[in-house]
Image 1: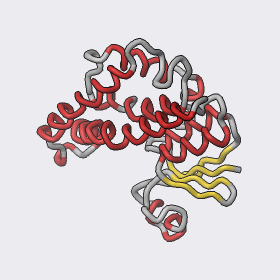
Image 2: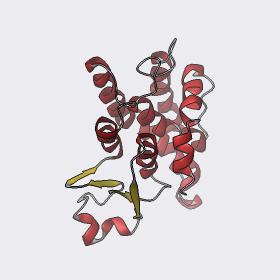
Image 3: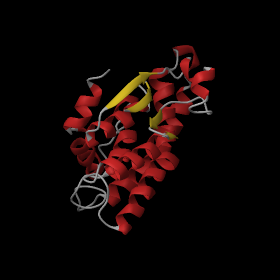
Length: 201
């Protein structure tokens, strides 16, 4: 059985969502990023000391969005793009989510909500919120006139990007200036598989 190491209130939620979408049995091994991830046993699985990590037989992977690409390619034909061009777009958008979108979202979230009050720096939050506007506009433009990133069908590209953007409202980031992206995010996050993953928290 597939094992996913992590806790739902972390980047592991992205993988839990993907696992629920593809519908394969799995075990969520509770692994907390602040403690368990640094144990000698876990470092053999992910030497970076971060969560999540996945074991599927003799395959061990880390990096949440890479894990999701693997799961879709191996187990989720409905999630995997139908053309080579759209496969390229799935990789493109997944890498983009990590390099362009996640940092301003996470930085804003940390300094507005997650860090202890005495460690929060409002200036950092405001600067990150400003940086967020550029990738949000890019995504909004890409979604003009289409339901999903690869056309009319929800794919792993949508899941990976939506799993990052879905954190934005928790950080108080405004999506109202990006109506295409906001409507797309609502479609993605309304999927029953995400509700099943969230029910594990």
